Length: 96
Image 1: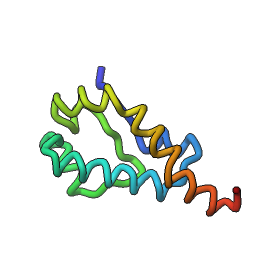
Image 2 (image 1 turned 90 degrees about the vertical axis):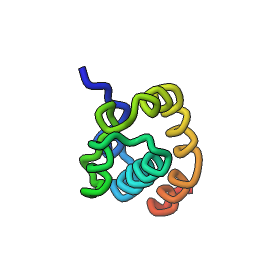
Image 3 (image 1 turned 180 degrees about the horizontal axis):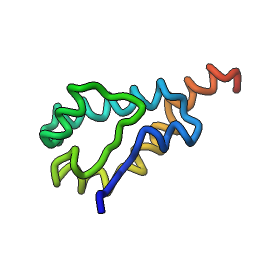
């Protein structure tokens, strides 16, 4: 069974605005590419363009990247949630 770490659709369905989700996945794939952690298939995904159908899964990353993300992805997302994306979303929604 394919190991899926995250999907853009999961975040969008969870209420995060699509623009933030797509930006998040673009940034994530660019970082992985800069650190030689994308597989050839992952590089194709990045260069074809990241959109709201993006998925971070074992076919798109190197084995080391998969281990890395399995260990810390939840903490990474929590840091994002507690940080600027949440603040920006709240401002756009008129919340305090």
